[in-house]
Length: 117
Image 1 (cartoon, rainbow, N blue to C red):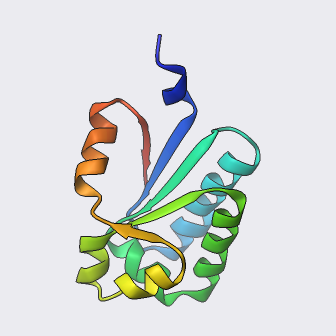
Image 2: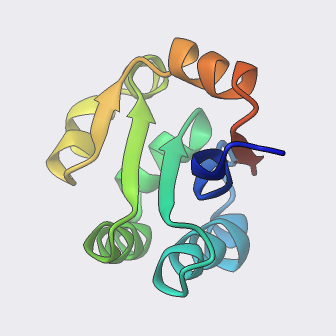
């Protein structure tokens, strides 16, 4: 039987630079997971092209603010953000911009629930 704490945590790894994917799957599921209580702890991990998309799209920024207000923790990969020149933009949105390679590896090795989109 799995650790009960593991069963209550969801990590959504958002790596797509496609806005429709963000709106119709990533953001919808992430927000609903938190506000409807499907998962107790929800973290959105911004990775790769999604960092650039988020930094340049006001509609998506508003949706991320809504998620954060609902209690979703939002973090972004610093290497990706720097690659696209948007690290400061993401920080200004209140996003925790930091190295994520090792933390992601640790989540996977611990068999945490990671949804990659």
